[in-house]
Image (cartoon, rainbow, N blue to C red; front, side, top):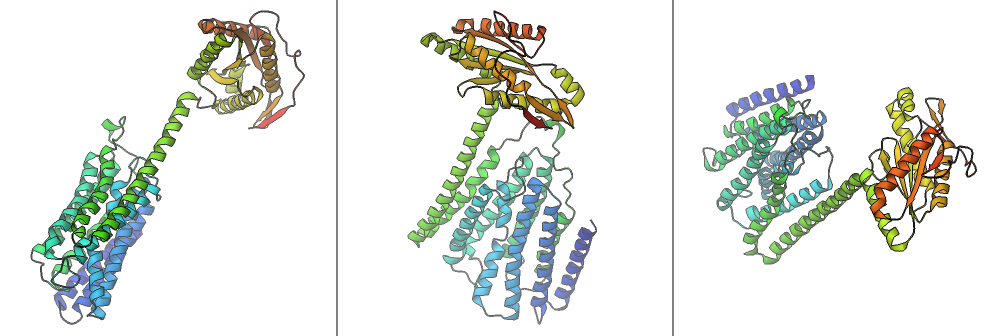
Length: 504
């Protein structure tokens, strides 16, 4: 915090120096040049402080402070042009550029309305980029509306007829910040948007004093410049004192609830609406120009809609997968594998082909968790799941029935075929070499098999396979046991498969 304290001290010294320059020189001699130069240095300190605040922050706060730094970099360009105009007066272009940039320096800060408080990662998102392009379209429309069409009394100044719309737009941005702070349940969002919203409201009030109040008609170097400097010291203080250690915190009584996003989504309609309103006035003078601005704004809005729709589809797909698959093994979950079994049994009724069921359970899995830890046990389950999925046929279905128990549904399998498939699975797992922390671990499966042909007997089919599984457990494990008939021991059945090794 030493550097932040030095920045604040430097800002206070520059403010005092500015007071001295205004008191000593005023609007005469080098007064305007020195006044603008001191404000240029002060604005540079604000940009640095905002950038440093972004580096100390995470997520939403980082993005907001980056946008604030971008806004003050835009302000620095405007102030640099003003300093150039003080040294080389008489350039209407320089005066026009500086005044336009001063009027819309806060445009990047308005982009903060579009940031998501829960999912903002602190980097440039494609939606934020599209919103920035939309904001650029607003600036283009604002240039045409505020500077190109109306005739001002002085070069580069806002015409009197557009003062009121300008302050309405300024007030909307400040009000949006305060609304975001008031509606948010996040302490971080309330603090950040609340403080910046109050500052923007105060800054807009100072602008109103310049256009409507005692500042009207004053030249550079007059006492009103001190107010501009104070408007630079305030964000400098906000940035240097910002702490985001409590960023993830939310109000305790609201912790279980998630913030509703509908109010923040409404902000995305603001820029296209502004473009449309200003283009209606532009169309009275230049129809094609207004049509071009509206068309580009429409393209940007449509692109944003497409990106949002694409993300929504991806999220829906992810939710469907999460609802149907086991989170640990990525196999079908308990509910879905039972639905698959019922579907296959219904198909069996129509076609007269039996459906085979295999109930498999990992032998002595509790010892794996107790001796190696639950993390190693989870990895073992994932390995077993992947090996079973690799052994079965493409049209067979494998699901995690519960715990360390798996259910395999094999259509068109009679007793002989389901026995052979179960033996392949048993052999595959028995020949896997799993090494945990340098110690080899042998894992086996006990399997119970059954076949059925009617959906009405699905529960009986599962009970038969489960009963056969317990018979395999009682018979010595690492074996296949049918629902009726003799067991297939560890040494019988198909030949030994190639050994697979897994190192954990």
